[in-house]
Length: 563
Figure 1 (tube, rainbow, N blue to C red):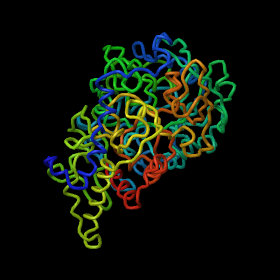
Figure 2 (cartoon, rainbow, N blue to C red; figure 1 turned 180 degrees about the horizontal axis):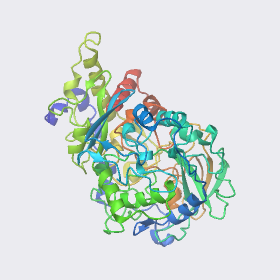
Figure 3 (tube, rainbow, N blue to C red; figure 1 turned 120 degrees about the vertical axis):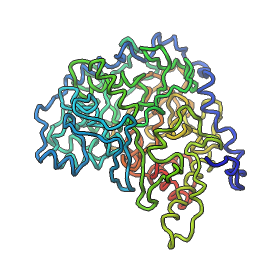
Figure 4 (cartoon, rainbow, N blue to C red; figure 1 turned 135 degrees about the vertical axis):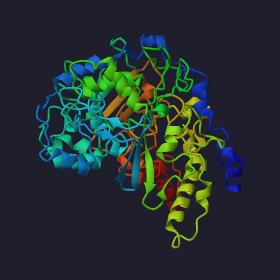
């Protein structure tokens, strides 16, 4: 690995003052528990906290009661030859059998994605990750496809709808439709999944503690807009016999999870807000709280139970052996871009650059803070900076753009303001930092510190206007402090962690997602509001008034595309 002292060029030296305190957010989360804001109820005020007992999280029984009400189509057979369909779409159907090689590459818009199984080739026949787990024919693989970075893309779902006449299990009415009460055969009933890659996430209201009892929320919630009709539905809505709130989210990648699930020395309390950390019900240890958008599940095992019972509409919990095999598979699979249309093979024979490519992901260390010049989030791209004339060597010119994009990500300062669980952890508002302040986890660009934050992707006034999504009015109770940046009344497309914690400060707060395999799994953000990589960059440019140049934007896009 190159000597980090070489990185201190004149341009970086000028920025040392801006990045000297980049570790503050993660350091707070790893080293100590933050003190709750003055006037906020102590954890004891809610008596119990979210979590799980055994393999069942507190909200799962209520969710399963709703899942069992959703219609199940018994015939999900595609209308075309299945072997041909799989070859064309690269789609793994639950129960189809076959082998997932130790290394497989899949074409995408930017080049080739790689999937590596560290344990070697996987025989999918009979493997519980690849077999149907419930009544609707879905397996884990249904929504976590190798070709799409162990997630799914909106484009892949559109192809699947066309090729199967909408009969694939991925379109199951329980959450593959905008609402289970809509006509199953109509495309419009599945528009959020087809156009934005969003599955319905249905959560009990009020939220539940680990034992399944009701938590007392700090706010009231009203449905302002309900285009899918699910939040006001007499069976599936907030005023039904089993009160439920529906939000719509992208499935997170089931890959690179050795980084995502590493607890990194997490204390018993969350550094960002002083609340109790999530606890593994089997070991009693705190967990990373990083692998779901709202951190509602403490472990991969409890998440697999949740998925089987609710997404799969299973009538029983998978066996202990099945759960172990699912978790073991998820912990050994790695996903990342390997080749680029313009940049060629991304990793040379010596493994350089050391943060891109699937082999480097497989071999990397977990628990490493990346907001420093010794171990930057995505290490070093120095050798790619020597760009000749683009007309003479377009590959080298593209690689130089990637290297510049890495520098923009890591060293380009801007003012971060009004971001809950960022500006509230002692940094002040505004604070001058870089992308790596929040995206600080080595190799993945998640947040090394457990928790969630509000970057504005779902809350007004910053969220992209999305009339196809529900809109909620949240009113914080008079006996708790108002939200420090949004006040006592908040309008949101997705209350995020607040649907689990019941906390006013958590409204719209979402757990950071990893950056790997982005090229294979558009659209982006938890609500699919960024259709492509350019829209990610444009959102942050607008949200924090960064004023990127066009060159900086293109360099950032090229950088993100090779991860």
